Image 1 (cartoon, rainbow, N blue to C red):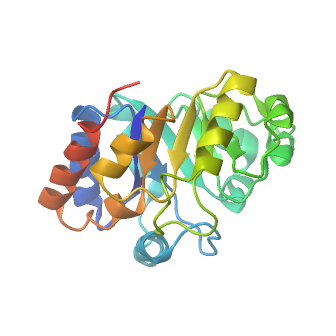
Image 2 (cartoon, one colour):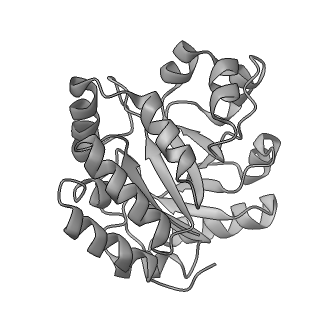
Length: 236
């Protein structure tokens, strides 16, 4: 499973739309859409800067979500923060977007708090996180029909370089796959197509964020880079 993260509405509405359409047609398996929050805890300088740009312009997120629904060709995931969904209303958010998106990745929501939104009527799959510290056996209690488990490849925020030969990571991913029966997607720390190919040797897929967002202001560079990611490694 090959995927990228894009900041919604960045650097402007028309450029985002053009790049989203391209991403839907270039061989990726999924696109993760970032909805910005003014107090991010997982975003590094590039992604938090793009989010601040969108918030400053007061871009109409709902109109862009309508565009995403109308042009959807691959799986779509939303990555955002708890307050966004809580403020919108968990049940309202779910009813509005469950036909558009295949899951949500909530950066500041620990796995054990998935129930907080579920009890409020949230019906969209919440993707569980795993790290080297995760109890793989305990993780199974948070599985509820999601498409994959998101493995955070490094400690800290997005934008740093992961050690793709880290045997602790590789061993933990194998353990999570065996005990959960789920596919495991590697996120955080992938910078090049060669990195993506390396990840595909021990995980079921990857998602690249910072290096994609960095190229969103330059559509041709964005397309060249994203296409190279779609062509990397063996498709799972």
